[in-house]
Image (tube, helix red, strand yellow):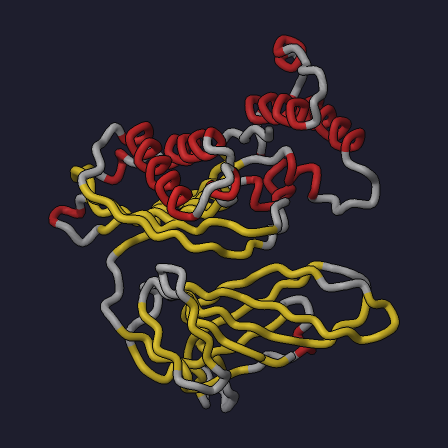
Length: 356
């Protein structure tokens, strides 16, 4: 595997290409996109391209062996072509956001690898990255992955929304309610939400949180309504302001927003959350799946009379009837899945979303 190109993506959407080995200056909010190529032979499958920025040490621990101290990293899923007899060239890329996890400094190193195939190598470029600027004081308080992230491949809008609100204490944040409000408003605008992150600035007096940074990725709203990007930006701003008011009952004082277009490849693994679903979530998921596949809705009283195991079996039956054989095992649960909400070190399964 070889690194074939590197791009710097600025928050406003502008991208600058650099050659491998050239010095790269990055600041907080930038994204480093690393392009690679490799030869592949075998069945079509999903692979994970992993990239990391950190420091190469000539000595690692107590052993006289080289080591790479990762500081920030990211990964991306790509599907290889089917080529059972001959090697074919494949290209892939991974985007690494520059966050406050890395300190300002010079001569940081970069490497990439394919997680499933370590024998493909881990090409590295040393002393190539300088980080400049002042690290932001924002901390992540919510990360919501929506079920559409597990089945969607295509273009997305990635919006960074910053705003200032009246101060409030941490316990006032309603993560689940905010996620549901964003999803509801996006669906009204004809789109689907992919991913949502909420950061707060905790540097103020008495740890009061008042400055927000919200990163939301979803299917393009402008494209959904046949209009241009400026209208899409306005829609995302309106959606987030409405969702904040619904979730927090607060007023946004000042705000700004940047939106760029990205390419998105679906995430694997949503089926892993199914065993944790309770009865209420299972009932809602059954109705979600029935609506998605335009099946008659099972009466609520019928579902209420079923046990959790019976509800899971019933959901399996619906998926088996609707999803053609031979497709990946995770696909039914991706289509009729739930929201994963992570915040404050706690992971929870929220109520499922509806598929139109």
